[in-house]
Length: 300
Image 1 (cartoon, rainbow, N blue to C red):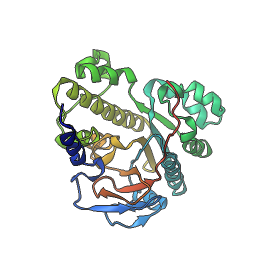
Image 2: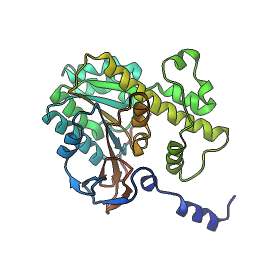
Image 3: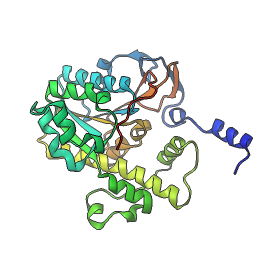
Image 4: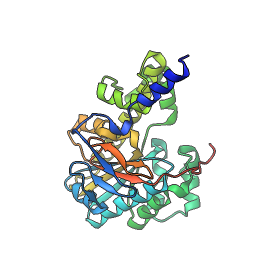
């Protein structure tokens, strides 16, 4: 075990995931409850995000799962895209592929909130208090927007986290692209999220492979959904996921870009009661939502 002084020094020197030297050089400050265009440093509103998405098929919005401000902003971005005349589809990290058929009845207004929470298996699919996400689902019902369950089944992720890519059965492997763990830049982001600890050993490699499966599977779900739809240049998918799955354009967005060359628009959300300094490469836009303490989480 490291002496306490050395351990503290290591923690203090661990790079912030929001300040990595990836992408455009430099940093910007984001005041509480403000959105900043990281390329210009200017404060903007949700309509600027919607305008930046013109001609794009994807808007990736990274969240802190327990932060109500983030979910209200996600709903505002969805509404801004609708106002701009886009045909919006909302893709969710929160739902796994097997529950896809349980989502449309909410969009169509057939179910009450209680019925939707039960039929979509929200408590087991995700577990965070549904009230945190209510603004998003209210926007979806109001605008009658299709929803897509992006995530692969949880047991797939657990299997890879335990045994690596070999943990997937042959049938499961056929349902997702190969797990490619060779991206050193993405690996550095993962290590920063893990407190600066390098990925090493079988356990560390398997954990990283599980993260890559997560991103790869969600990108695959998004592309399969859009590719199955009739061509529509006006359609845009808003991908809602944890910030770690979209930051620096290397997660879900990076996996989509590898396959299609499309980068879309990325919005990363942070949480600080003071101005937050972030790398310009973190996302195209960064929103600083207020810090929320003791947020409710449903028991599994």
